[in-house]
Image 1 (spheres, rainbow, N blue to C red):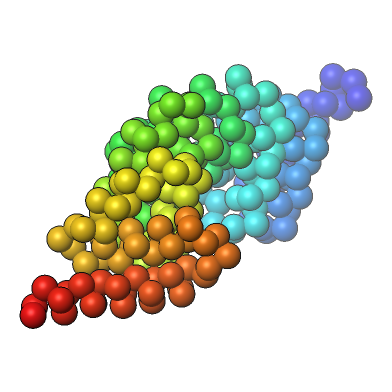
Image 2: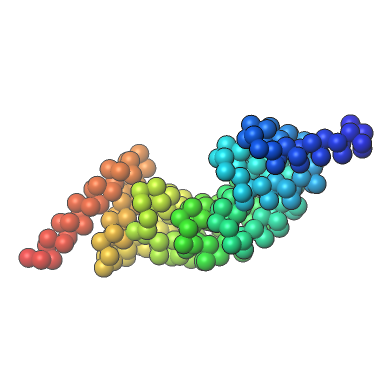
Length: 222
C-alpha cells in the first residue's frame, strides 16, 4: 500500500469510528487493530470514553492492544484523570489487557476506591495484573477496604481480585472477618471460602458466610 492509499485508509477508519451505525464502528475498530496505525491511537482512546456499545468498546480495546505500548500507555494513563467515569473505566480495562507494568504508578488508591463501581472494578482488575512483585500485600490492604461494597457483581469482582493475589490475603481476610460491619464480615468470609475452594460458587459462599455471621451475632447476644 502506497502513502496515498494508506492515508485514504486511515481517513476511512477515522470516519468509521464516529459513524452513527454501531456495526460500522465495530468494523472500523477491527480494521484499526488489523492494520495498526499510530495516527489512529488518539481517536481510539477518545472513542473509548464515549462509545455506548459494549462490543464496540471491546473491539476498541483490542485495537489499542495491537499498537505499540509505548504509544498507547501514556495516552491511556492520561485518561485516568478524566472526569468521565467511562473514560477512566475503559482506560483501566485496556491497560489491564496491555499488561505493561509501566502503568502501575497510575493505579492510585483514588482509582481503587473510586465512587463509580465500574471504575473501581476495572481498577481492581488492572491492579492485580500490573502489581509489581512484592507489592501484593500493600495492594491487598487497599482492596480490603472495599469489602462489603456494592451488589453481588461488584463483590464478586473484588473477591476475584483479592484471590488473584494469593495467600497474602489470608491474614487480611481473617481480620476483616472480625469487622464491626456484618457486610464486611460476610464478604471476607465468602472470599476466604472461595480462596480455599475455587470451585465453590460465589452465591453459595455468600450464603454460607451469612449463616456464619448470623450465628456469631446470636452467640454475642446470649
